Amino acid sequence: MWLGNIIHKDRELDGERLELIAEKDRLIYLGPNLTLRRCAVVVRVPASRLIIREARFIDCTIDLKQELRNHRDWVSASLEGCRFKGRMLGCDFGSFPGYTSGGEHGHVEDCDFSEARLDLCRFHNCDMRTLRLPRWPCFTILDPIGRGHELTSVEWPGSFRPVTLEGDYKEVPSVVATTFYAPAEAKRSGTTEDELKAAIERFDFIVH
Image (tube, rainbow, N blue to C red; front, side):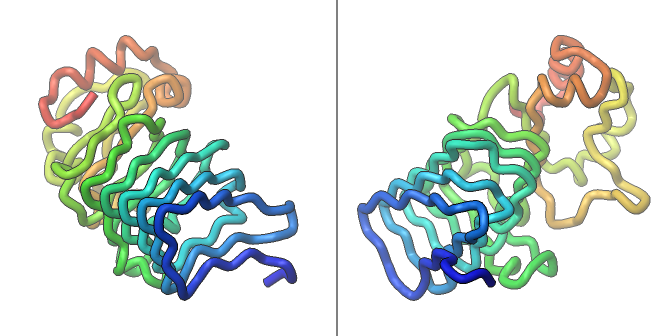
């Protein structure tokens, strides 16, 4: 741990604005034993410098001012009634036991992601009916493992594969939904947004 790290723990904040900014050689820790209630949390640091350890967010607005990439610490946070804004790539939410210390305590409920841009983001062990999801050009596959047979029995454009059920990269069993950003996925898969949209419209369990 570097000297000068910013650590928020062992307290409760209510109705405050918490702006997360740190110099390049500093980390920001949220938790443990931190509760943020009705707070405006503004994130201005990359994922590599934001460490979340069993923090609780209640009715907060979380505004990401730069893309948060491959940040899976949300799985050790409890998120209740929160609203997310900004861009996220490869982020995980909910309870993900075994992934990291405290991952089994993760929780996401009654949260609003409709103003966020989610790409390759996963939700674990949660009730997706309580969440508001971003609409097209984002799309969310609900219950990708349970619906795996349906998803893998049809052709998909380009190299896009909605779920992997076997092999080293098969989806972990805790996943209940996966969200993609169509422009980025079209580029990765060598297809077009229109072709992706036509393909996902075949299924009523894909939210778009």
